[in-house]
Image (tube, rainbow, N blue to C red; front, side, top):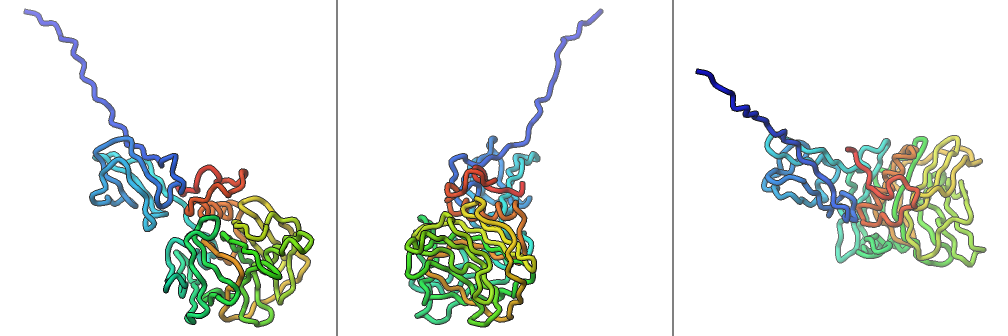
Length: 327
């Protein structure tokens, strides 16, 4: 007796890991409010390698508390790619990263405290009559703190800048007379590192638009013809290094001015500072370092994308079309 084999071939289908993506329509680019999508059902969303209980739908929405964390999706023993949004928490020399969406202490919309998402610096104003106003749709439709000169914020844990300082923030330059300005000053003491002095003159002054970093009330850098107008909102990057006086300014992610100042080095006094201005201040970052071009671009993009305002970034800005990620 002979037999003939059936010719049956048994194959196993390879199961691929799921893939997660961010909704292309998400105006926050992956930050809070953005919807994440998994291409396979039957899994669970994870944060930093830990399952999120009950989060088993294919679509999941990023929350403010989880920004900057590593997000994955697991189906059985298969784990997806990782999406981790960049935040300024790892910036070199970070002093304070302030997010207008959180950390605010308000009494009838008057701000009496603001804590950072990272860093030791913070703001207070214990005097009710001096507290600035929180406005939900101030800076180009984004939230802002309106410090109208007499209503200021006291700055704590902002040390004298050792050799460099960077500021990046979304600012609303309200029209005022005689100048449209914002500054941080050392409570009147001479020799303090004053940043954001005289951001913009009114158009009546020969159309001059000035951006400056100052010491002892002497303008360190002055540029004319900048694209800043009274009443406008701008994402401003200002960096200064000592003792060489190297400086760099960007407006909405575009190069505005850079070079080396002729003003000699100076030394800051210790002590508390005050933030005063006639304008609105939204999310912003202080760092005691001269940020790299990519770190500055990432910070600008973080500010813009988290507020759903990436459209204001210059077309050549590195993260104009996609928010910055760690992975």
